[in-house]
Amino acid sequence: MQMTAPNSLIQFDSFDNVPGYLIETMKYWEAARAERPVPHVSTIDPTALPTEALRWMAVFEVLDGEKDFRVRLAGTGISSLTGREFTGMLLSEIPGSEQGRVRMIRCIEEKRPYYTGAPLKWSLGQEHIDYSVLCLPFTDDTGAITRLLMVFKFHLD
Image (cartoon, rainbow, N blue to C red; front, side, top):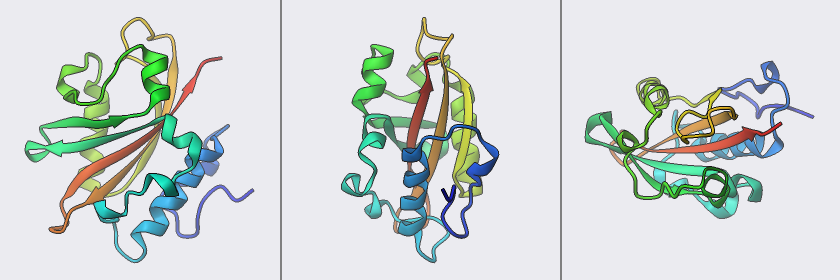
């Protein structure tokens, strides 16, 4: 199985056990960007994403010059696993989200996606769970990154 789309910005080959829905989500983003460095926010189309990705995705709105982020949408899998509803919350209101914020700012500054893993510190009482996340930036009409689409894989075993 090919692990990346042609000319991919992320080489999943270096990661073990990457779920297919993350690879397919990356391919979707790369198709949406076409010849642009980063796709436009209008290209976010949940019907074009893998069904499994929808349960594990979160969409963040970039606020106040990257100083904070609002969770515009958090999938049902995230809410069920963590026992929290994040939709509408500010990232600054979520304890343990500091490292994620640093990565999100870097994604914006570099105008490129990232894929990484970390312990689940932003869901109190579940720090024993690790997760992987694919973060994909989207721009507005001015070229500024205004949305980040993140798709998670929680490692429960």
